[in-house]
Length: 123
Ligand SMILES: [Zn+2]
Image (cartoon, rainbow, N blue to C red; front, side, top):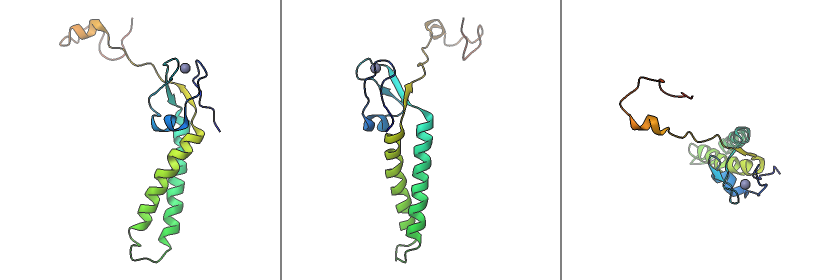
């Protein structure tokens, strides 16, 4: 099992919490913004796709009146079940990138776009 702890205060983050809110997790103790590392999400997605493919292959071999629909349904269900499960197991937390703070000076003159250009201008 991967360790899902806050990098700051080592508070444990519950697996369902990490899986459900992988983009924006707040540490319950120190309030640090966390996110699931991209690698974990890639692994869970690939595992979900693999499970979907396996379910599709298995169900497409069965002779059924609903043969045209079931493989897709099974593949969808397999992906939807396996992917979050794998994410729960593999998820590692890291600090989320800092939220860009709008600069007050820039907000005061919304029409002007001369000095400093736009985007990542910093002092
Ligand atoms: Zn913390």
